[in-house]
Image (tube, rainbow, N blue to C red; front, side):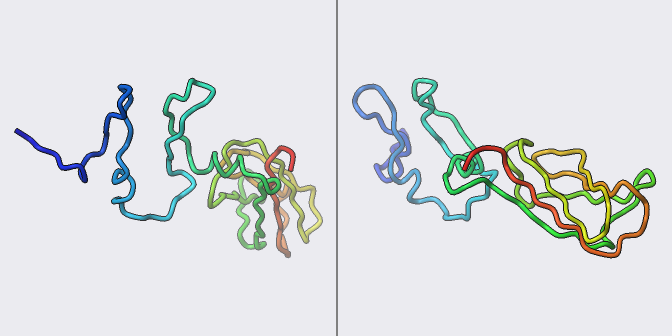
Length: 147
């Protein structure tokens, strides 16, 4: 026969047939720094409070405080030639939740800058020429929505 002590109980009955997590289900776990791709458990009010998992990033995206923005600067020597044009692949250290964002590109070199291959994880800066670059190129990605 297996016996469990109350301090080891993870799931308990709360009297109405429902089950609940015991407080040590969380309190005795190792503390870690959350990553935006980690999951948390929620009660989905749009689905009669059924339990669902969501990413930390999806919670961050709901927070007030303005539109989410990512920005960076690319040195002229970081561009590579692809199909006869100088390009640079921007890879976000933390992805947006989707590809619904706007991109602005400003460069010290006179170019008609464009972007392509936009995804939640980044995009490609296109210089539209193979001419050498002499200055840095700055970019900003801003999530769509209202602040």
